[in-house]
Length: 195
Image (cartoon, rainbow, N blue to C red):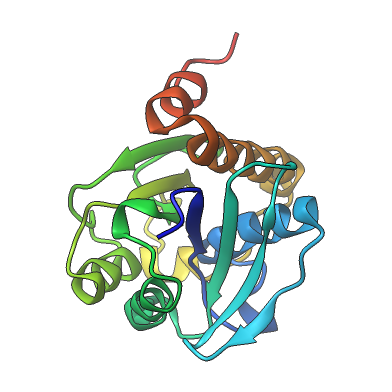
């Protein structure tokens, strides 16, 4: 196993109709990383779109993946990619939306439960372990009595879209830092309150 190899999975739903949804923020982050690495996504036999590259010369190699399955069935593609690339689950970073964090908040954690997120739940089940890193992208709670399932399947608001690019860049920075310097260094930087 290449010790300098990481699998970065951005969760979301496939197809253009879902592309701007809050639930697809994981896909958006992997797209930012692919742009930085000048890498193109290609279909992989594990039922995912995959791009490979390094953020900087000599840096860790990142396998970026967007499962082609719907969110709740993310586990099969992720487990297939872990096997294909012979990557240990400890070298897996999953990027997903998080209702329990305010919009434009980013939290990094390793292990733990799925917190009600069905995509994460399916990955834990298929991978047989919860010992992977999660980048939890805060999308906030739905306003009023709006159903959470409806809320995550709507696009970001026009106000949110002004801040969203910065949030995506921050998440991409956090992933690069985790791969290069470790989770603790990234947590210390990205969990700190803004100056």
